[in-house]
Length: 182
Length: 182
DNA sequence: CAATGCCGTTCAGTATTTACAACACGCAAG
DNA sequence: CTTGCGTGTTGTAAATACTGAACGGCATTG
Image 1 (spheres, rainbow over the protein chains, first blue to last red):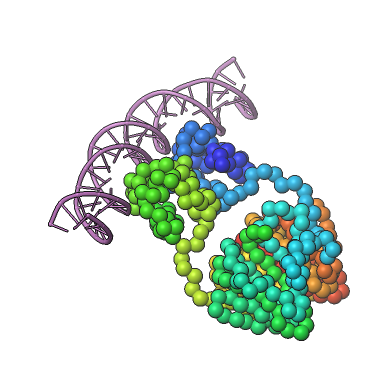
Image 2: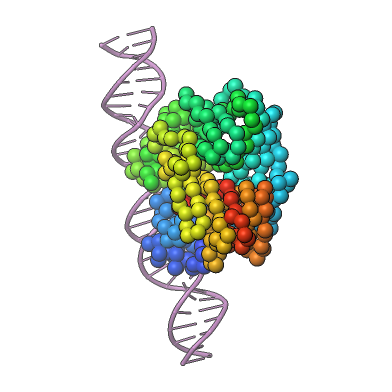
């Protein structure tokens, strides 16, 4: 990862000159110049000072995508979703033309008896969802919940969890998870 | 944001001593010590070297949550959602006890005539959703789409966008956006 | 109770980064 | 053309970060 290149790209995107950014950031223009040319590796504190003049956080700075986005599909009909069904559970993912998507947005159906498995799931990120039809059992850590139509949930995916439909009717669910580690 | 404190917390979480991490990272133990005590502000290059010994990326380093999570509500009945309705548009947010949520998960209703406004919306992040009932107009950049029940969408929120219901029936929508800049 | 080993801290010297001030270039106005 | 103002670059001196070799603390072990 090229710090100087990133800084220059971001600065120009914001339409700032080296001197302009330097003034806002409280550093000298030569500092900006040398950072952009990678002739120095700035200290965290000075890079943070520089970014404060944009303004931009460290996280943003290191995570912004510099490559220009290509035009991608925006609207998807029901049959255009990616089917990532697992066993009995039907899971359809929105946004097939967004390979680097930040959100995994799913339309899920748990038929009677469906289950994400005896072993609890644990991964990074957070997940949330809302139950549209039927009833569904949700286990998070030591707690067990029964969701009914209209109920929703939100929890950190690092907590062990499991979805199960022990009822007679299928359960339909819209869910979102981030990051989309699939 | 306290760089030293973060580094120490992460290092101990991984069960590494200063010397151990230093060896893996290719720096001296004194460097680690001084960074953790904030008696220096490390250069980007040396912090990156240090993190490579963990291993961890810059983005991760600056974004990991250090504070232990307190027990929070997981399941929400329909009436427990946060109402952030704006004008005619009804928007209910899932996860009121998650102030630092990564996802804004919304249950929205656009009555006939409802509109996010003539001025197009532009912000960081990505957004996605699925239309459950009715029809809805979505404008992204220069393109205009008509969503029908079952259709979904996914786009980068940096592209100017607008939602509008010019039809006779209300439109019901489940949406997710990240980061949750509300 | 040494002796060993690992821990984190500190100090002096060296290497790197920064500020300040010049510099060269391009451009537009007088 | 000359002047003035903007741009980014570069030299030098001062400030800061990094290394390598100490040190004291604490536990385990012979």
